[in-house]
Amino acid sequence: MEIPEHVDRVLSVVELIPPGHVMSYGAVADVVRERGGTASARSVGTVMARYGGAVPWHRVVNSAGRLPPGHERRARAALDAEGVPFRGERVDMRAAAWYPED
DNA sequence: ACTATGACCAGCG
DNA sequence: ACGCTGGCCATAG
Image 1 (tube, rainbow, N blue to C red):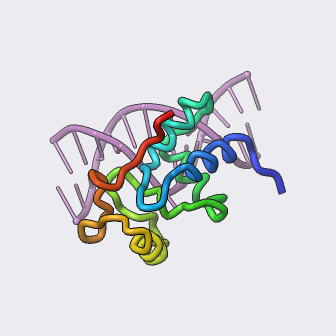
Image 2 (tube, rainbow, N blue to C red):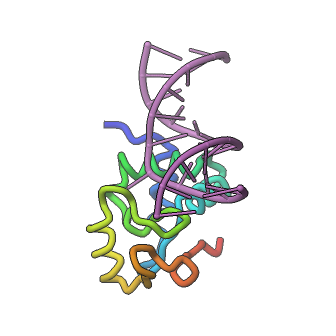
């Protein structure tokens, strides 16, 4: 099967996220655009839903720090193991949010 | 916490 | 190319 270009761009950004940190869908979209591609928060979510299995998808959360619907359990376990700080059910974005330097 | 509205993009006919 | 639809969103009220 065929992997579209924009999908590859999104996935390569997600791969950059270091363990112990997270990025929001919107932030990933921003980086993709900085890199000359096109993306929106929602399109990133769609890509993750379909092709996220090959990358650290659990490091991508929404801007409120909520985990992806249907994967809360697994994401929580993975993030927990990496030492990502939580505030109740949500990731503490202030402490865990990450953005690439260049 | 919940709803409503906005905005953007890929997929499909 | 074009319009339509829906999405693991964002933000304001």
